[in-house]
Image (cartoon, rainbow, N blue to C red; front, side, top):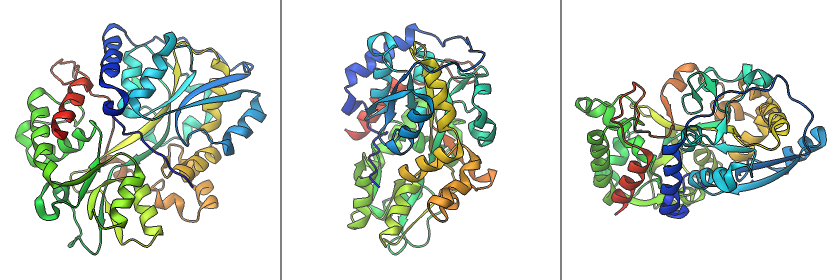
Length: 387
């Protein structure tokens, strides 16, 4: 299995100027209103996707093409910023669907780039985990701007022979106990992890949502991350980066995905992971329909198809993540014994309650106040953290 997952690549790679131009479009646009089709009609014969690499593999694309006659053309993006830019390219009509992560989805919604989806036309949506039916990263004012797909938590990964006792707090990556052997993602959304830690340890800051930070709260998170910087061995950009760091002993503790834990354990590296007492952030991807989709029927057929247990399981095992459809459990175990439990699809609801899924920071807070900081603020802050 080849995993190339670079969802965390930032504006550094995508070009800060291009990203800010993109955000300027957001400021002038608004969410698209619902104009649902009554039913899914005959396919247009073509479907153009923007996706994470590994999200449109031939194993499930070819059967889809055979079933529907919709020939899939895929464009792999290297970052959330690139996904947003591609969906706005050429007036927004070049691509029909995008597999957006939570740090991009609200940008696409409030930028008027994607349209509401009629989930009644997606039968498997009824079997989704309750937390992923209408999550705030893809559902606004009761309208579903896409259907959730796959997800995962950002866990605390540690070497069981080098880190003792078992860590129970994110203190492990903010204290100097493991100075020079800590690794965390290279991504502005990492600020939310710091905010989540401060939410528990500095309640006087009044942080309620790690993605909705005032200037004062953002400054506190940046201060924490700047103090953490000398402790960092490396900010990782891809899963393979962190795996290598743990394999060669350069890192003994860090923020990770369950995929890294499983890959390292499979190779005999003594590691384990945990969701610390403060909770954890997590990602959730969504298939979102372009506001200017030229092949909407094929797009609906795709969303129906990839929401089924079999395809969700295939995707999850290939990519190392967890399906939104809870009925995919047995299909996962058929592909890989114990996979359902390994990737927490059978976890109790209390497990999900610990996870704060990514959503794009916006100046307007959930309570309507406009004193929160924007994604652009976070991008600038992250550059200050990295120096």
